[in-house]
Length: 136
Image (cartoon, rainbow, N blue to C red; front, side, top):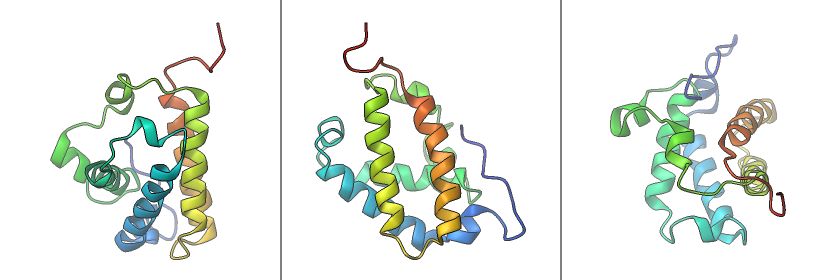
């Protein structure tokens, strides 16, 4: 799940969004995560390092420089998240925060926001490693 987004006539999604808008998105996203009653407890209280890692990942994932690979190695997203019980409900909470952050980031066009949200929806589903609450 670390392949860059496909190129379109307008270039990579990273080129279309740009590094400043991507940073603004990540900052907004983690402010929402910090306030979310479902997500805040599973994240560290200081989200600075987590936000930096997310920005590095998204930069490469969207077709920009491979910052995450350079700093941390291969993302191995699912393996890195296995220590955390990620239920379908938590994946949906994560996506709600991302959708809200995208809506609060006017520097990202609606079309680019939809494309990014669709890609991250696939990633979020892939990250689920624990049955839904109340499942047997």
